[in-house]
Amino acid sequence: MVDTAQIVVLFVVVALSALLLVLGVQVFFILKDLRRAVTKANKVLEDTSVITESVSGPISSLSTLTSGMKIGASLLGLLKKKSKFIKKLTED
Image 1: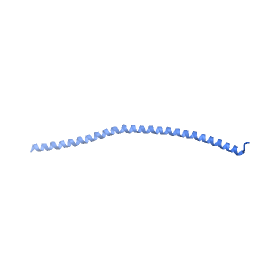
Image 2: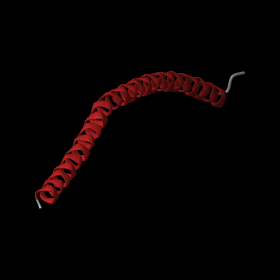
Image 3: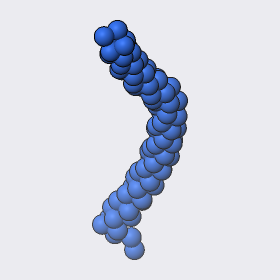
Image 4: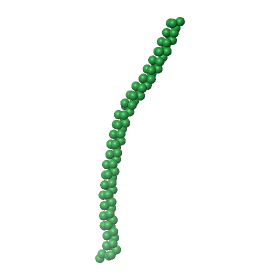
């Protein structure tokens, strides 16, 4: 009726099926954890982007203010030179 080879083959098939089932469950959990990690990484990157934008705004304003002050200082210097030149001309 049932030969020993058939029993061995049946045992191997059952064992491999059980191992594949366990492996499939483990792969499912690994992919689930990977999804969770990618979601967290995405949130961190979004937060970093928001922080970078909030820092770059004031720095840009400060840069604009500094360049405006430089232009104003050079304009004042030119006006002083012009007033000294006009004063010299009127004295002569």
